[in-house]
Length: 122
Image (cartoon, rainbow, N blue to C red; front, side, top):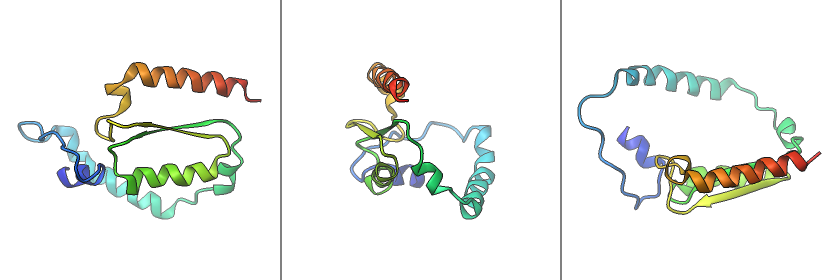
C-alpha cells in the first residue's frame, strides 16, 4: 500500500503513516479486485466516439498534490475529448486527501454550480 500511495502523489508530498495494527479484513479481497481490474482493462473496448459525442458539461476535480504524470495527464486527455470540460484544481489536496473530505463546502458549491449549468444545457 505504501508504494501504491506514493505513486498517487507528487514526490514531495508527506503521506500519513499507516494505521497501527494489521490490515483490516477487507484488505484480503484487494489482490483479487486488482487482478479483476487489470484483466478488464485489457479486454474492455472503450467506445471513444461515444464519449466524444457526449454534449453535456463535464466537471473534473483534481488535487494539486496528486501525481501530475497520472491524474494530470488524465485531465489533459479528457479536456480534448469532451467539448464542455471544466477542470477545478484543489492545490492543497491529493488523491488520498480528497476535496470532498477536506473542503466539502467549496466542492459542494462547485457541484451545485455545475449541476445548474448542466440543467441549462439542452
